[in-house]
Image (cartoon, rainbow, N blue to C red; front, side, top):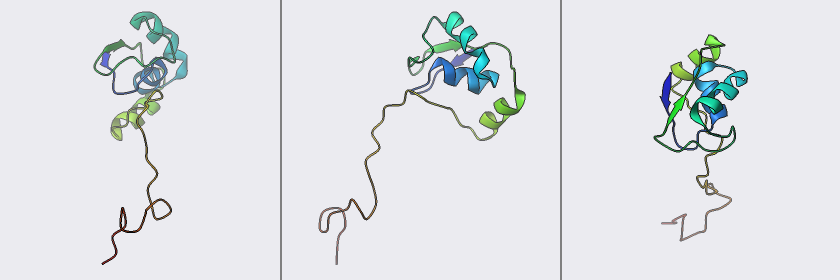
Length: 92
């Protein structure tokens, strides 16, 4: 089945999301012509095989979660430990 890859998704992520098991990664890699650990690219099509563990697939689909192992977004530290008075934290 064809799947549109999300931001930072690898073949491993697609195998878990669509097939429910890491064992499916070889089939995803061969069908999609990518390495297991490389990002597929947002919007590119990945080919997934048959469902191996439907409980895992259901968990991902019910919660609308998409694993993204290659996500490189920057998560800036947040919270009172990182705020500067009169810059991030305004005292009135």
